[in-house]
Length: 356
Image 1: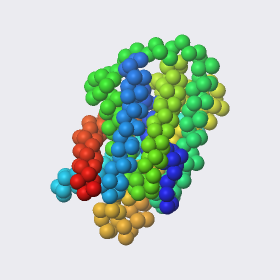
Image 2: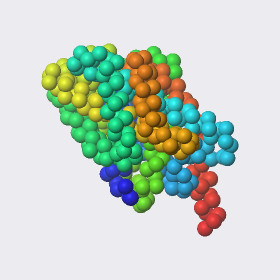
Image 3: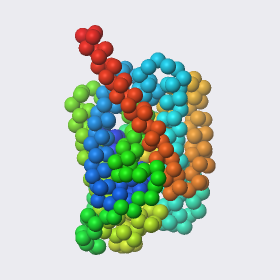
Image 4: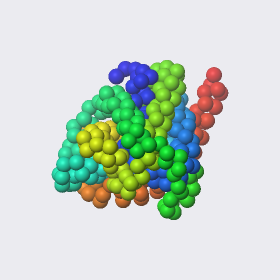
């Protein structure tokens, strides 16, 4: 791929976030819906921050002339700090792959009765095969699948509102009990931070493919709009059918309550979202590992196979438990890295002005 246009950039950036927890509902509920109507405000804030930081991230890869995660995160030439930041970011990406695999197994068991460990294994096999194609394969997959995911969530939300009515959409109550996220503002910032930590690794190789600044602005802004549509669709669906909130995969429960056939269809949509998110995270993690160690570059397929097997083993811990622990903890760590990234961008712009 020589140059990335607006729509592929938008779909790729959306694909960074549309994982199992997001599209199935529990992630959005834990970070937003559980805070009542303020949760809607929280996600609007998150969407704005996703857009602003997304633009900053892609621009930073260009002005800093690097696509390495640790060099983007840490503006100072401190080897141990860069190494630590890279390890944290890579660990988070690995955690995302594990969570997506766990979610796929839970979903396949719910839909077909297939044992979880087998579903997890089949999912990781499919992800690993496409990951062999690298960044180009990832972008192509996103361009084909993300439009389907966005339209599908919108259609299911409309069906839920028609079936159950719209009276409860803005009657959400604050039922949050997570001590890691005491307020909707903290939850919103944490949500943005941990998602962007994964996004840095995924979008870092993309910056060099975007040649026009207008493509960055329009592409990332369009992505922010699509994320808002998807999030609103999912939160509205859970609001009008609150019985689904207790399910491990709430949106599948909503769709099934409308029609068993729609439940199966949404299950397929959810599998696609998990696939996209796991693929992006795995490709980003492997790209970083290959940048840092010659041994990984020389043995790409073996490294990929090992990462896939380890992800499968980790996924056996369970879907809901992984989301409630991994995401908030990494969210707090990510705030520090986002501040460092902003400092790095300012430093690069100053150097540009001084050399002009």
